Amino acid sequence: MLKKNQFEWTQEVVEAFNKLKEDMTRAPVLALPDFSKPFIVECDASRSGVGAVLMQERPIAFFSQALQGRNLLLSTYEKEILALVLAVQKWHSYLVGQKFVVRTDHKSLQYLWSQKISTLAHQRWLYKLMMYDFKVEYKKGHENIVADALSHQGDTEGKEGSSSTIVAISSPLADWLTAIKEEIKTNPKAQQLFQ
Image (cartoon, rainbow, N blue to C red; front, side, top):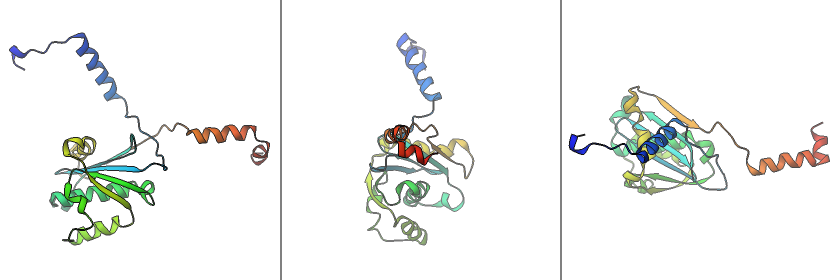
């Protein structure tokens, strides 16, 4: 900063800075999946990596992987398809048999199923996606913040092939599970089953 534009540390700035530090040192609060609601996969590709987030109202899991070898030479379009394929495969157990939405900042992916198949890799990727029931929606690049940041994760790590997935470890009991446990405690027939 220039001397004429000095930054003033007010009490409000200090409080905001401390809150930011606190939030950045705490793991994101991840949601547990609710299979009665649709899933959303937001994905993105950068020059050197791919990233995605699985969500409903809140994030459920994150995925990031640095590209290596031939994948670094792919076109932008091909990297975007690869990001989608890797994300869907990563969360196969959540997405297979479910209708879900894919959000991407690469507008041409909206026409994924009607485009001419130009390469063998393109054909393989589409084949892998055929078992899933999803709709592709365009999301402006400046709004696709999480997936974009995850796709650039490999840029700063400098390790080819690095991959990370974050999933909820703390698992608060769902209301229905708590209700079942309470019912088991008071139901004589259920008590007999556990003796």
